[in-house]
Image 1: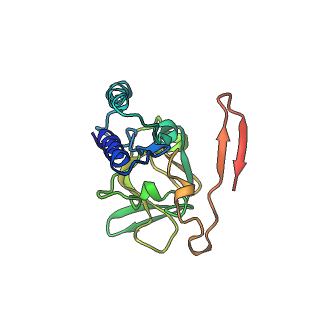
Image 2: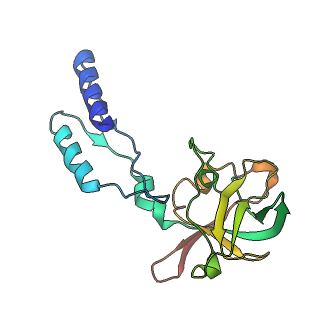
Image 3: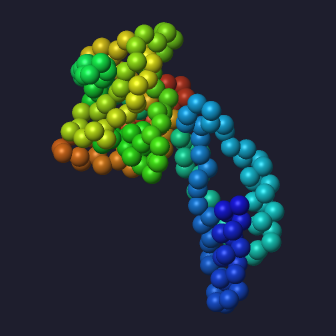
Length: 199
């Protein structure tokens, strides 16, 4: 509906002004299933509906599909640097947080904070043993990567994996926050070899 309304508006503006935009960007918003209960979008149905709208107007349109294309392809990895107990709650402190992955902390346009899929990387098949909150190293209460998640026990040195991290990761995060190290980004090919690395 939103894309159809955008096309209709662009058409009306072109008719009223006598100037046709060379390209109408109808935006993104094509999400991925981040959370339990989320279902993948029906791309074919959207394409059919949008195709019907495009034939009505003489406009060239573009769609931003970044998150839809790469969101599920990325995994954010952070190493546990401390375990803390406070007021009956267990916290796993990891070596990166909102400075590496702002979206996972719920501070990137999210109204209600929900946890991305998270696991102890080397114990993904193990049963959950405890409920923990995974926090980053920054001096702000906003630096919470996962709230009260059931995981196998993780100790200092273990790696926490946050899935669905292929979009809005390091490039959309305040990487210079208080001088903490930047995230490393690594491209891994289908055969397991590393294709490129950025710091």
